[in-house]
Length: 219
Image (cartoon, rainbow, N blue to C red; front, side, top):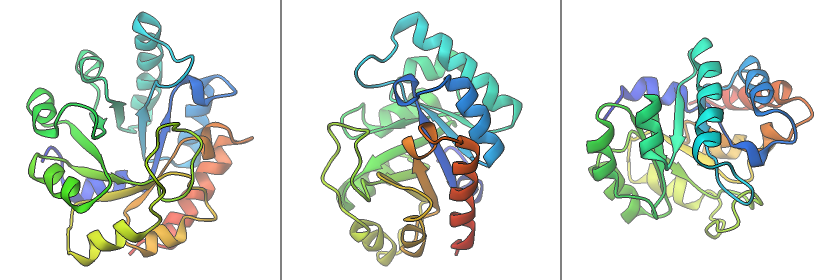
């Protein structure tokens, strides 16, 4: 474990994930607006057709990290462990296709480690290997990830909580303020979104609405 569980639960409430390909506007402006609206955690996820690489990717990551630092919002890097370490990011998030969680944990020490899981076997393995939180989804249909796994609704989330697994969990996939309450009712600590904020007319307002939906349903 890298961080205190109570602190992790608070950070997961409104978890914003974004890269340049998810934006119609300047990513820095979107992130500033989202932070004003109340996001509690940010993940830099630079993936998909037309995404940045190398120096350009690193430059954008540094700019977004600086914005997060100004507001004490933890800055997580998706998948790119080397980038996370070179920037001294607050943590990393990995999927099942990335390096095993225990290998990543050794590399990053006490930083935040999030792992995407889709069934009980993956969840137990991630916990054993040192995950601080689990990303569960896709809860609803999503267009952001072309290779997304089958939509699983709230079934797995409810199964995890029924098994009395206490690790903090966050729902992802097709989430907006209107469909947030059932996720919270099923036992999630919070919700993670990409386009619900990054492509909103007002990222600030969208983040605020998500936060209100989460806080109304906190256990």
